[in-house]
Picture 1 (spheres, rainbow, N blue to C red):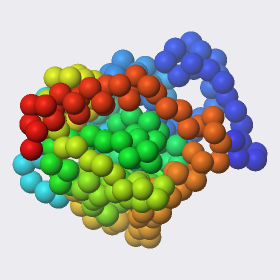
Picture 2 (cartoon, rainbow, N blue to C red):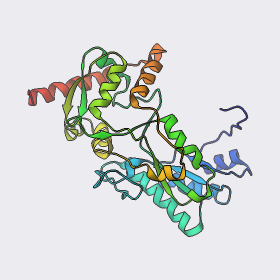
Picture 3 (cartoon, rainbow, N blue to C red):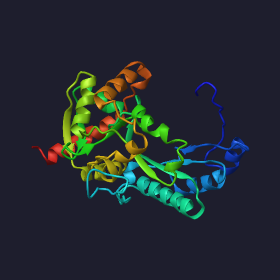
Picture 4 (cartoon, rainbow, N blue to C red):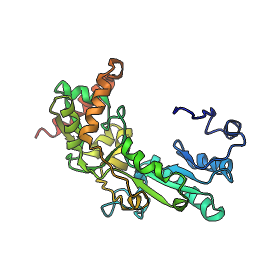
Length: 291
């Protein structure tokens, strides 16, 4: 924690625990990072009603229409994701909060991050296991034909847009996404990560619906999110935070991630069950589609 910060310990999903931790304190801004279902935010409305000037809900850009009917995605893009329960729950949270804003003036601001990463959170399914495979020259799976467009946002860049929103009365009742302006294909993402370890990826392209049939959890995150091109228009956040610029490309972010993992051997965990699943999927797909 930063020097001078006060640590209040409690269970954010238990009203009594939360009340006990907060006491009689009032806040300029409250940020809810771990609200995933409507009951989470309904509890917050009860707890923070009249106790904060601003309540910021961290939603998700995966709540936007999937697949999007138009690109780039703006804040006026409809919220509709029939594929992923996580996204539908985030939409329901937003609807609960906006209803509270309209009926009682609850001071909500909604922020929709897209794929935001730090040094530890590798953007590939399987994490370090996939990086290890690329280093060893083993095949890795990329969904589709690898050309769908994706946006990765470094956490420091996200913070540059996010922090200035706190305490701004004129953003209450509004929503914003905060993303990088860099757009990459999934082949490029794997290539940049491989380049950071001095390797060249051996990519096998597998259709997303086949991945979903083999691994429903992975498939849900693809069909409900990553399989579709997502390019964002950041005009709105730049209008209220004029200095916001995303300045860290993924080429630098990938190098930071590899350096973080290389700094401590205990971080470089290889999951053999993931290895076995990838190998099996590659074998079965290449047997069915030898070309």
